[in-house]
Image (cartoon, rainbow, N blue to C red):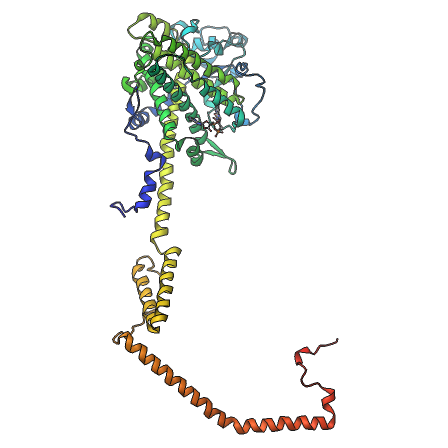
Amino acid sequence: QDANGTSPSIQGIADSTPFCKMDKDEKLGPGCDVTIQEINEINKKIRKDVLGLVNTDFFKYFKFDPYKQCTFWENNDGLCFSRSCAIDVVEDWDKLPEYWQPEVLGGVENDQNIVAEDNEANFLNQLCEGTNGINELQKDRDLNYFDINDFTSKDAVLVDLSKNPERFTGYGGQQAGQIWTSIYGENCFSTENEEERCLAKDAFYRIVSGLHASIGTHLSNDHLDTETGEWGPDLDLFMARVGNFPERVSNIYFNYAIVAKALWKINPYMKELNFCSSYNNDVKSKFVNIVSRLESKIFDEDLMFKDDVTSTLKDDFRNRFKNVTKIMDCVHCDRCKLWGKVQTTGYATSLKILFDLDEADEETKQKVVDGLTKYELIALLNTFDRLSKSIESINNFEKMYNDRFDSENNKLESFFNKNNFFKLLQKATESIRNTINSSINGTNNVVVSEEKENDDLIENDATNFNDLKMPKKKKLNNSRNSNEDVWSNAWNAELHNVAEALRFIWRSYLDLPKNLWNLILSNSIKLWNAFVGVSNYIKEDEDANMYKLNI
Ligand SMILES: Cc1cc2nc3c(=O)[nH]c(=O)nc-3n(C[C@H](O)[C@H](O)[C@H](O)COP(=O)(O)OP(=O)(O)OC[C@H]3O[C@@H](n4cnc5c(N)ncnc54)[C@H](O)[C@@H]3O)c2cc1C
């Protein structure tokens, strides 16, 4: 055992756990001057505010079109019939809080139909004081990494995200597999510059894999136990989907860095916009509180798409990511589609802010910041919350894993180190070996050896078996040496054998008259029976056991 009391074999197992394989003090990769440990610390500090923010009335509503056609393959008809796949849409406007009612919001007449017809876009715009807050949907589509039609469709619905949590839905199988394959398949860029392509490919893959792993973390963290009917974390599922793959865990942190940097980058402009202050002062302070904990070094977006040569690559990247957001239309499970849209739009917004907003250039500022829609902001914040929640869950799963690992180690240790079956078996084997040796060398050795084993057992396990009453140890006279014992035993045995033989002869002489008398009597009876004819009636040599009862 080492200084910590851990046996080398167990230490070896501990070193090879997936969590140990992750170096928490190593930087997350090129472009990220931050470690997993540092992100854990940041996340702990801001988690409460992030949660508070996504539950405010501004950030908890999202608009999307669940009926939009899948444009990537035909015959995409199919439905997820599980209740967990369904979404609850905001329909009953009367039940919304007073400040959500149309007459309070910008003097719209008390006519719910107007709100419905105008689409909720108008409704939400007024929530943030229209032009004073977030601008109308941006028409300049070139800069977008998502499909802007998602929010202009007349079939789009408004959903309260807090009432439709991202969790296990049961969606999976071939359809889900096809979606993931298509998404990963978008990671294919055409450029001569090998280095740029590698960086773009790597970033694209990490974003998609981080999204995939984050979804896997949520569905494992909020999983339905079909036996008890209760929702809760499933450690085995998490390990199978994410925990056993340090690379996937690291990609979640990478995505956290990307979205955090995008938030950091728009922070100065949020102040300018006097963001939604008229409806909820708390929102702004929470936002500022979160962003003030983030640092610029968390992600260096300048490493990618550095010069003009890369602008084609950037366009390619943008179009391919836009495809990822559109592939979400092919998802059969509405709940998964909703969160898929929220998060891909959140990443799309981050990429736009990171790669197209040049703080030194007023024109890009106009294009990017002033053009941000509230849906992008809602998606951005909610995506950050999803990642923040994933990181919280990963830390929680790590604790669960270590607790289980420790308790299994303890069991393993006590299994091998205490007086368990295998130890007793080992002792029994030694004892048998000694017995065999003793029977070859002499009988007393067996006794001595067994006694010694008993003594050892009692002494070694005195602490473990205090409650057990063991028989008193026999004290043996060990003064004679073993050779003397052998000869004296042999002599005594021989004497004993001779005495027994003499006793047998003497006993035979004593019994002779009685035996002679019995013999004469038995033969006389036989003769008499023959004389009177009984011998024909009973066959004496017949086995008595052969008689049968004929009842
Ligand atoms: C957009 C979308 C949203 C979804 N949302 C939900 C949801 O909210 N709730 C829910 O219960 N299910 C959701 N699903 C389904 C879920 O993601 C899985 O597809 C499903 O649980 C089946 O999992 P699986 O083990 O078959 O492998 P999948 O997760 O489907 O993965 C397929 C293959 O991809 C590889 N892979 C897995 N994870 C990664 C990773 N992080 N990085 C790189 N490669 C990886 C593995 O080789 C794996 O075999 C969603 C699916 C999609 C496409």
